[in-house]
Length: 270
Image (cartoon, rainbow, N blue to C red; front, side, top):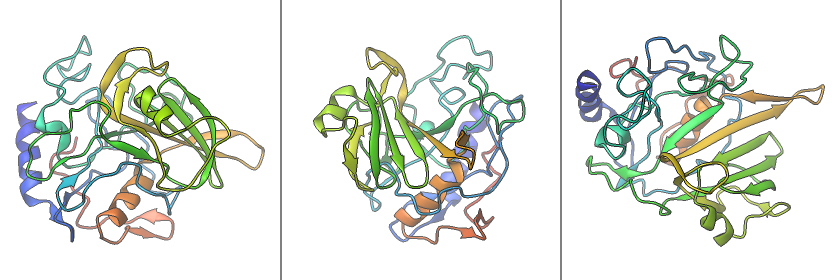
């Protein structure tokens, strides 16, 4: 973890800076933390026009995505997956580069057909916003607003989970504050527009009955095949493209794939 922390500092200092002042960099799709972790390395952007689902001030704050298992305070932070190790509010958790978590196996046995062994984490874990200066104000419950990634209709709003069906796929948002979901009037049948508030980042279990994980938004994406079957697809490249647009740089999409440019790094990655 010391090596990881040093690499994080280097990336934070050297990462490309967008027009709003936000430092931003990301690891390649499928590059997961954990020595035995293997992800989905495809670069296809399944959803090229999504709204980024977390509200933040692009001039003062940035958002990262990374592992809730291997980073400080995660269940596998010690390398043995035997309990939470370290501070869940550690600054390193909120600094670039972004890292993919789709297919992450540690502590999870979920079916996932696009993963190398057909099981693993089914979504992307997005941290709460943090100040660009490196100070952490992210570890605050029920503060950071989650928004819909596209126009759609709510099909589930129960506990800490909201699911919204859109024209391009179904999106599931987990670990939100249950009270915030009610605050925004989110319930089955409600129609929402892209960017509309649907809840706030928290750390509740799916049932919404108790704290369960670190403060983050878990986002899943599913598409319906021509035969009517729902297929789980990785949101990582789509969220990178959405975030790039949010901070004022080109989304990096070419021929339906995420291009490799100066924002994709290897330092600080697995």
